Length: 426
Image 1 (spheres, rainbow, N blue to C red):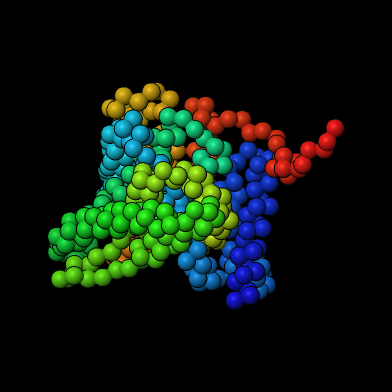
Image 2: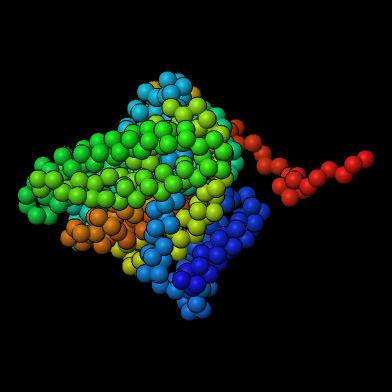
């Protein structure tokens, strides 16, 4: 136990210290946390085999999964807070249209190029893997996007639209992946399962939204029994932890596999709570401050999870580069086309797609499922390679786009330490 506590402390301190360097380079803190994870991971300082000083094996990193799942739950809960009724009335239909259309366009673009790659080089990639990678390409990482927005206190039309689209993107990505994976499995096995392609993904979304609504309502009801700010924040944290735990439950009814999407459940919990609780904004600010160390650990551990051994396989590199280029083009032009269809201003049309490039946890989860296909290891390794690239450059590109539209104010030089010092009496 003491070794793991030291590992967590080292991860926090290492990530924060490296963020000082990235600040000098005008890079987001998220990049520092990810790089710190790489340095402290099994392919960095972990190789020294000093107990507590870095993560020595990927298995040791995987044992920290409860922390990353919890952090992802809080991130999704915070994103749900963006779905306030007044915002949905202002841009709800546009966000839904953009969220669906850009994800579908990205999937189609990646599918077309990777299937073309199969036709030219059949031994390099199979059709089932190509179809599955196309669906995985639709997923966007909400965590990195949210951290950039929070760090730089971004505010404006693009930021508001981005938060809504990122949330919708995960629901659309779940459906696209479920359908594509069902088709890929059918191509591999020679039989089509209607349950896997249609029923189970729809049921997962319905169950997730239902559980999220219930937890949001219960949180508001229980929260009314407490009046101090600290106790209300504590009950909010407890409910998010409970929601994350319930989201992990799977069961089977009449041969149908039932489960929940952690992101959808926690986002819906946050959405319901923020719209029925009159003091939710003040409470969410306090929760945001509480979970900051958890978010740092999430990204450091995510960086440590990246398997650098995949870089030794030239096929993975070639397919990975094609995947990254086509997904980037799909996200950029998909967002631009959907923005024009919904009559968004040109600055938003030109920059929204770039802010949707980060990819991490959701895509990795899909890739682990895709690994069960024949030659599915290629899909997992390609996504790992893409996540390595996207997570290192994605946050910086998001910051650049938000700066381009004027929604990030220039950073000041104020110090919280000096700001909080008592003023001397004259």
